[in-house]
Image (cartoon, rainbow, N blue to C red; front, top):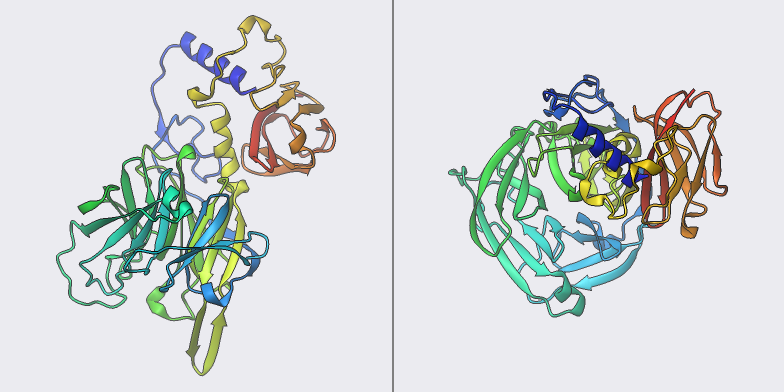
Length: 443
């Protein structure tokens, strides 16, 4: 399917005159979606959205200061904000500690965030809630050395290019930071700005040495950013945090997520920016976010306790799961057809394509086949044996689910009155990840 659609798209584009680019909002889920827009200018706006996390379980008391979360080496790992210098792999079904990996040979274990690229884990020691620190740094540790316990450690020192005042401003500085991600050549910091409740993007080289973090764009996130995760192959990042509002528990600690996607290069605020709010009754000090597949996200929050007006409030540390398929699958599905590097070398010649279909008649490289397409009343899908029993969903291009089920049979009926003629995403949630196809329902 993918190869044929891409091939046809390229062929069609080659025979058409070049049209003028139209800038605007390209996300069908936005309130100001422009169907004529061909270039995303970052102007998309969204209706206020409330999300509900699913609690996996409470964290063990030894890691109740969980300050980071990342998916690495087949699991979700957290690192508590205290001095035992250990990574803990969590069981993603119970939140129990499944594995411990302790690090030796480093002088400080105070870490606000752990991020990664293909070769290294990066441990950020840059918490600065008074704005006085001049020893901000990130430890870089090779993944291979972590696994074989040899611990090859380098240090990346940095300062902010525009910070000139180092007097103490407890919980009132805009030079605190708890989150960062790692790109191709650079580290990107998202500041935790107590005074403005915005976040500013700073970039510095990801090589050991002493660097100046260069200021980039600022985004009015409306709270304190405490964690970040990045899925570069989909040009997708996510920030987590919570409202501050001067620190009063009665009006703060409402968690939120900001999805950043369809941006240009590594200009993370140049594309779509969608804030998702937790319910008003949810109050958690959310500190970390991670994903393994770009739709299922996991978050952790620290243990939090306070006494106000004689009432003690105690919020336990937890692992929670969020399903963002409603908000991201229409965007993610485009990657099945757009990237030219996914076109296999055995692309099917056009003369083999039936005239009444866009031609899902050949297996893709993973053993999937979906046909006929377009279709009227049924969809037939062949799939690898290990996808049997997987959940599937049919999703409209507006992001709304119109059908769901479990793959037991190869033929799926499309007679529901919810599946009106139009274009749809067929998503399969398998053990090896999510597989998506686009099909057309005709009259």
